[in-house]
Length: 181
Length: 173
Image (tube, each protein chain N blue to C red):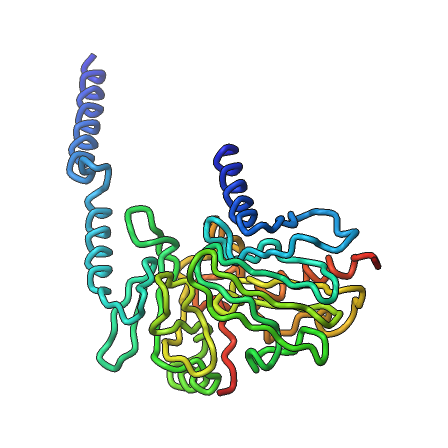
């Protein structure tokens, strides 16, 4: 009988401890304290990437321009918001849409600047700003995948057409073949 | 889901019909030349594609590209349009290169006088595999049927390989 009582006390103590720990680590929104800290840190980071060097702005990007004119960016799978997922981080360096400029950028910063985006694109759709005609002003982008991305259809959210991509420098990211200017 | 897909399909179809042009549906029988010579630039949901992405026409036919979404071009693979790219239209044929179109419904037309196989791309979206093919007449050879070169994006190479395989199976008309 005494053993049963002691065993019961142990069970109650363990359950109580578990309930106490749970109540201190899970918020009302279902996030643990750690998850809340991470979410706050991510928001703090995204808020820091507040610049718009490209017109029209790309809603799935968050950009921070550095004093030397180059930039760092986050690239999400969709316009940044509650359900967006971070797929790439990267660097962008100002330049012209010319092969020589691309080579100069890669000599200075390293390989992987596969994608050019115009600084100013007529119209309202940033999707039209990739590449261009020789000599246009813009930025050379180097994308670094933060996760593995399968080959698929970007519009359907199933992957990317130049994939599959392994985390790391995405050397095939939406290449824009630059002409000799 | 099915209803939504049907609506999107009908919307796309209606858009092209508005220009009085019939949509040569994907998968249609290419035993004869295509008669509806309209190509949508971009899909109704912003898809990065020419719709249809393959046409077979007669010499002298005119193709009309109609902007449906985003900003696109219809540009022949020719060093004159971008010297980073190889020639992928018939030797001696004039290269076409539309302006970057922004407004929905804007069009670009090109009359194909010379027989042969023409590969073309969208300037902003070649890297995403937005490419197309036009087969003019019965001349099924030339640079437009060559293996896609490494200068082309990986996505464009994959798509063009599919289109070339389709072109090679076309019967003489």
